[in-house]
Image (tube, rainbow, N blue to C red; front, side):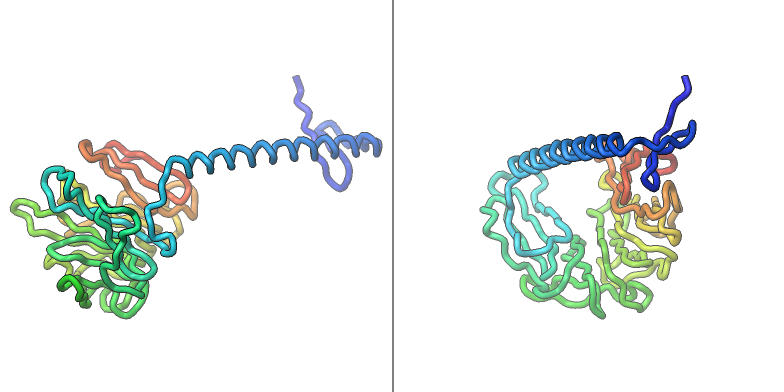
Length: 289
């Protein structure tokens, strides 16, 4: 059966069988019917959105810092086994410093941890707390004691200040020196002295959004972001970030950078890569998707 396609252009209805100028009454009736269907669809869609919003609000509780923009969270426990008396501490990187909360306390108990007034993007622990800032001349700081912070990360960015998007550090590795990886802009750096100095790749044609270490295989680390052609970028190292393998550059549609990666905690060859538009899955450590 031949399919007739109807479109409207310049006040006339055109089909693939020719042009048929309908009567004004017919034209008006079709427009009225279309408007009615549109209003019904919008009403139905609005109802679904409102219902979904209500469900989200009902399932989540506010946990404080409503007056701050929170850029990243880090949970830290010093216990090797679960401890109901001291379950751990939550750290929040915000647009004005780092806050912390002992998770057994009420959500109103957030306190300033340090760097008030500075926009903090990321935090990690490597013998001491390290943070990456969003702007300024010095972009990596270390905590010296409970109240004092100082500039560290010499060499990151090759001497040019670069926004630090993420810092990640391993737990101690048997027979392997503990290392730190940081990224930001087109820079990807490695440190083996707890973040005091960095060496790496500076001025990469593109931009990095994340670094993430494999908790089961801590010598493995991923880094990703946007390639020079606005597509996704993904690199992988299996030797504590000494060398890198390019896994993905420009995969899929243009303007689709990679924003984060999730690594399966017990089957680390399974990873999920989050793009600006969608998610991809790999079961061979990122070589095929």
